[in-house]
Image (cartoon, rainbow, N blue to C red):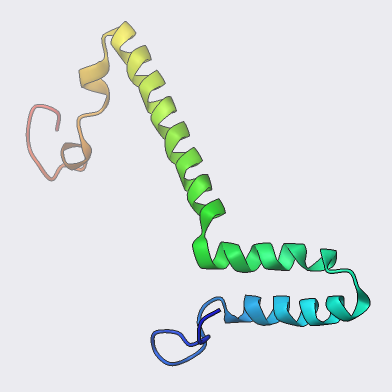
Length: 100
């Protein structure tokens, strides 16, 4: 852990996670079993690096792309690919065109 200070001089966003883990670890070392502190260490590392969050965002984006590709394939089979989504701006009436 670095200084524990954030950009504005206050505690960093993960400082509470670090303190919780550190307190658990100090007690666990005295008792001889540090295994209860594993989830707290994992929470601290997630706060620092965000790997689980990024993995979840990637899964959501992949599923969205998969569903969009499936919908586009179904539309092309029906011959409705051009009439279904005129675009956001045209759909809102901002741009006057063939679709509005």
